[in-house]
Length: 204
Image (cartoon, rainbow, N blue to C red):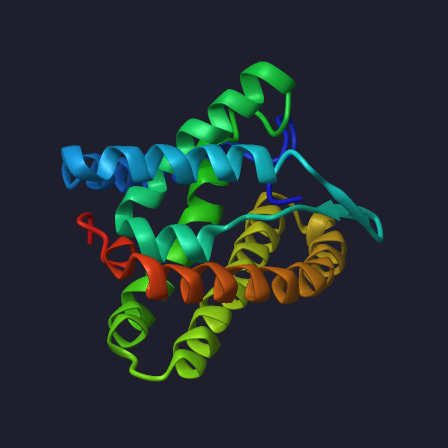
């Protein structure tokens, strides 16, 4: 449940998430270059399509986030890419919510961006394909777990009644983290062979 729906979070959490998301989007747009626009649009569309396919896991459901991959390829551009996709999902399919758009954008984009800042240079300079893919897999998995942690914190800060639910929801992100690790490693490994410049965001 990375897409928190309307009517669940408290006003302070909604406002705080919106402010942080606006800051991230503004930073991403400020660094957006003409050359990076097509790549940003493609990854936003991939996130839009992938996250519409939800797989039930326990009391919740999970779907591909691609936040680690977006962070590696877009840098802070992941914020506007995620924001646009989430807004369209809310407007077209009622997926997530409009009042929670800021919180959801922040929760999904931030872990991928931070992990890309930490691991991106090493991934791009790695001489061993196996090492590169292992680090990319770590970014993909940790980004998912980071999002799960932020979702749990958002719920817990809104009401203490959500704390048990938040703990259960966090556990449902474990299988998704494994899947994201494989997807991120595969894509990064492929791009490193055929188009390594795609892994060097002009936005970071």
